[in-house]
Length: 308
Length: 275
Image (cartoon, rainbow over all chains, first blue to last red; front, side):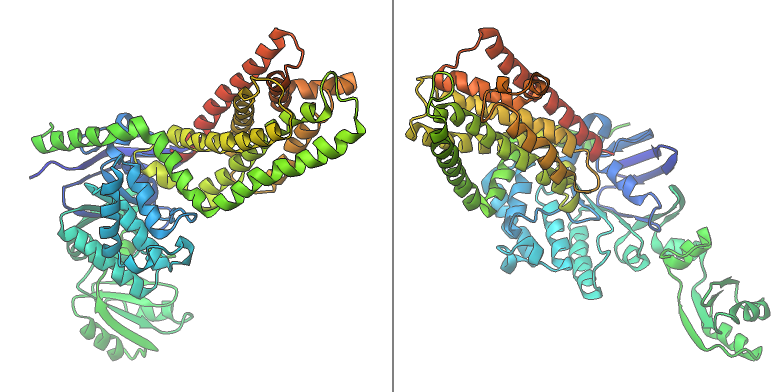
């Protein structure tokens, strides 16, 4: 097995009396697409800033490309591409100029930067907007430009912090497509997200994080297998009747989860579970049978929903 | 245990970090200069327009009320080096106020820079190189215009360009030491202008010698980098009569502010960017 490009061991970050990251361990293999899934405030971004060699850890060990970020921040960062949660493109510069100035930060010759900038604008589907002001771009275009900027140094590892937050569905799919291509080319991706579908689409392996700790680790499919059932039946009886209906439904499926607006029935066969419910004389206002997702894994692990 | 792959990765990283470690500050300056494309026209217009307005109003207009001049020189000659130092201060104040707040908050480009191999200290250096260049150009134009007005009798007058630049930079880094700590905009920039820059302009011996002020107000001038810069400019443009120790004090005071301000600003940047 190839040596990991990132190794974190008991990695901890404390701000005053708040522990943002609480002794986490993980490794990322070269070419792997690794995700940190968790709700806002779970410590994902803080972890990313430590892996990005900008935020100094409070304790624990961290090695990126075989180097310690405490001693080799600039060296490590020369091999990273970073897509932050909040866009920080320079609005005073035009689209292409943003790539040109950023490429220079890595000490690349101007001619090389210019050539790569044009190729990356093509990759980001922004060639026809290269002279536009950054402010005139849509949210999805800005994200794509930020990704293009992060690739200007041909990074070994691409760090993406909530890459599609705030984008409309179409823009998200375009972005996923671009990231998928990078993955196919062998770029190591590390991403944080609180969208389970994004994690399922993009990650080979992920850790579920909550309150600065890792709750579980595995591939999306393995996590679902381990912590959830194959299918989920969602039934709604109206918010004041859900609790009462849930009591009567005890024994249906493998497990029940009562949420304020609906009841989730975990079962290998959702349709059969629905039949059992109607047999009991219960008549849900709406019912839905779906595959289990990482959302269910998170709910099982923490008792809370990912997006609250 | 490290494998061959990992050693290659590490070596590549060390090689990749070499150029940015050495030249990073200049890459930031290059970025800032490129960003000037958007406002270069305004900057040039101001560089020519401001001196003309001030020199006509003060050096020609107000000067007619002071026909005897100040000391041994005309009022125009007296006021011209002060205006030049003030122009340097204005550029420095503009560049170290909103642009720094913007880089951290409204358009957080500093965080983007810091995610690359560039360090917080280099970001500050690069910003300051750009500001110094802007000041040099501004005061050089100013100097050219005051020469045309006949306000520079001394052959060493051109050295006043350096003195004014030093003055601007000393004030700039003191301001950036403060502005780099502002997290929320509560009108601090406007306050700084009103209660910092404007009083400096008025009480630094710009329009009249400092000793015309009541004794209890004179310490404002002694503490003011603008007064030190202005007096230094006067020594250089018309050989103002002052003891050599005072001239050395002007240079020493401004240089100390520059060094301390740069150190403190770099510290604030690094702390804020690497939280």
